[in-house]
Length: 578
Image 1 (cartoon, rainbow, N blue to C red):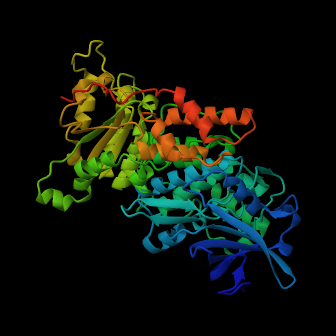
Image 2: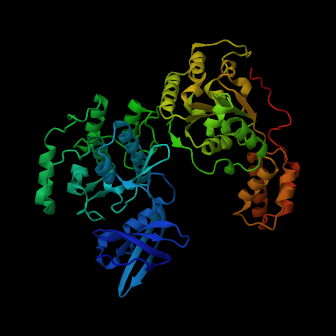
Image 3: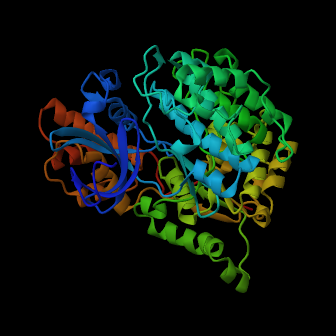
């Protein structure tokens, strides 16, 4: 029976509904003081064994959730708050986390059946992203299974899973666990966990079991345990016997390619040394076969206990759904934003009107200007404003098209973008990716540039838009600067008056300051880029710290008087798009 009723208050939260009762905690939905819904776990402090308390004072799950909250990951539940409340003579600790609307993976399978291969891999990649984040904090999840993962379907049909239960999270365990084990799902447990050994590789096994479950609709080596689940030794022997048989990798209903069979066998290897070394390596194995068609927030961190880090074979390419504040992130530059909305975004966001007025399709947009003027910010905000699926490619990280493998990677991106269309491919610092190989700038079409031109030319017919930035348009191979590739070119100026005010305010808000006149600072910094302003603020802060005084208007003005902007936008970079 639940301890708290609907309407009761716990701290500043009001109980909305009861979810479930676990071994050491009860779960609820609650309303916060902001009238937002949250998840809450309530622990009866008296019933928790001492070994399950951090330093004997705090519930491990609460302590480790707070550690994870130092950074955020879209695929791991977010810590919000914690506290203690008394009811009668009992003391209860509570943990509040973000609320997610969706269905548990178990419910999704029960309602709609198994997932197709593409969606199964997409979900697994997201879970691996969350695991890589957890492992990077030197923590182990220990309980990856479908009932601990909630699935949200985004507007475009893409699936976003989140690991919502951290009830068994711990540091690496080789001995007595710091969490209850009675409720662990037997078919998702790695063999070594039955010997009280929990490591990164046991999480890898559980994720392999999850992928198998998504594809086949049941757990690997699943058998009827009957009453054996109540007896620890009988359960262990039953699981061991089931796993002595060959893993089923093909049924009358499910056929998977050989590479997927190989991946499942490696992830579900009974010996830890035979498994993937990390979540990142597991994800890379999937991506090497399916990337980028199924790529979702690829894990980038190595396993916390792995000493044999994998070599970086190129940049990780991730796909995202455009959402967020869009152009609201870009302070000032109203003229540029209005141009982009009118000349590019309007037709894409209003296809019926575009068809009615026969507005021409746009294949590519180029944003150019000197370093530090905010092109990358505009690029990211453009994708958010549009709301399509998108990926961001960094030119210096990808390499140039004359390097081995770069064109192949680009082709995979364009192929995936066509599948996930409408899609925006964002390329930051295009001059690195497609440099002009001719010293004098004359046009001489190479096979590599022809291949890139073929990908971009009229890509709008496939539902793809390319948006790129560059500091030096004159260094880009002119063969891809034609109409049909880049149809719109926009100059991105240095931060305008309002943007400069905002940058000053942002950099000074957490420092000891006197009352400041930000309008004067913005006027004095005409033609400064963000880096120039940052440097000026840092110099002023150093002077103030040395003299042990607050940062004053006079100190800032004195710094600005002798500083010159790094680049002047009064002379625009020469550019001819024809």
